[in-house]
Image 1 (cartoon, one colour):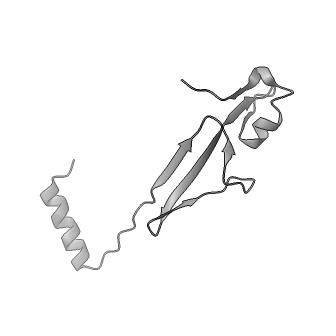
Image 2 (cartoon, rainbow, N blue to C red):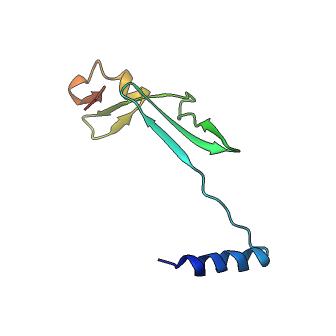
Image 3 (spheres, rainbow, N blue to C red):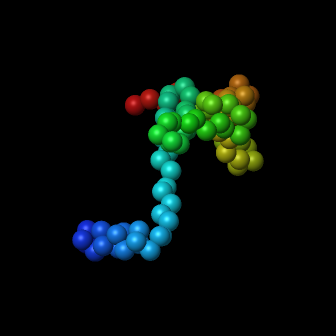
Length: 93
């Protein structure tokens, strides 16, 4: 762990030398019992990240196929009728 006075001096010296610091993005994940959403902060505002299908919400569903594949989201939800024993949804403690 770096002592705070050493860390502060490093930052001060770096700023004098014109070093550019890149800030990491803040990510928020809402794991809902029905749907989940992922967003990042951009310019002080939350921006929802669309899933691979372009939707802003993703069904909170996971399924396992006979071939060993793991399906998530809408793909898992679509096959729930034909594979109910290997599909997990609406889990709440």
